Length: 197
Length: 155
Image (cartoon, chains in turn brown, purple):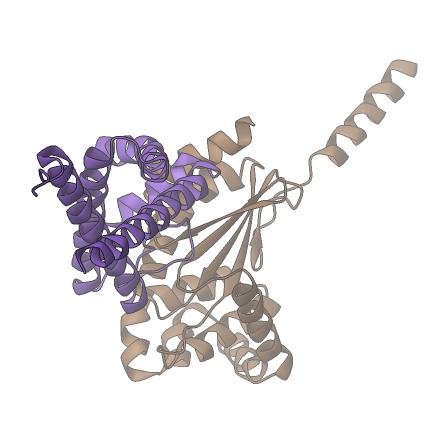
């Protein structure tokens, strides 16, 4: 009996010590991970699409799902991209419906189309139900969503972000900015070196 | 008049030596205090070198900058140091102009991160290059006149 109680307690402690990975919204992974990466991105920027399509899935697989990296997506629409701010608002609105990753992926997949036409809703309608689209339409005009995008932009400016994509890698209170789309091998080497410290 | 000209040249020579030496030391320290992979990512972004060369450059260039900066400030091996500094700055400038002209939106990598290539960074590095050329010319000229030695005195 004592053994069973002991094992039960040990199991409870172990599950409390390893927080579960979460990738529902603008964050992915466990908040207590040794490294935090903030990704400042613009949905209308082609390099951000490359980062989203080629680098982030590998990063998620190797570091986020294993609890080594906590990923935070931040909006940083550039002023020279006329529809980027609106796209960021739709993505933030989608987060409130728990569909950030789906909408972000759709925005990048259809980037070429809406970047010229400006028809963002049409571009993302394929991935959401009509009911969700109605909610998204209303939420995208919410001042709270706009404030969230502005807050991300302000955070980026404070972190000296000047271009997209930019990843701010934080390990033990030290920040390393990585601008552009890095070679995954070098990024892998950088993260491993930090984790080995 | 020649005496006045020599004094100006000497002052300019000293100013350029300390300014360029300081720039090299500053750039080296910024790179050496961060993981080498960060500089490697900046070098790789230029899309000029294969992976092995990117790693080699990222691991050795900051030390070369440190050495050059120290030599320029200490005034040792100046002929070699000034020629090497000019050659290095010329390579950097060509790489930056090429990237800027081809529309690559990348970090310059000159002084750590957060320094994207722009007209401003090109003007800055162009200034360093001109200063380095001038320093090399003055150094080589001083060396040549020292080798000839002082003119013989005539009555």
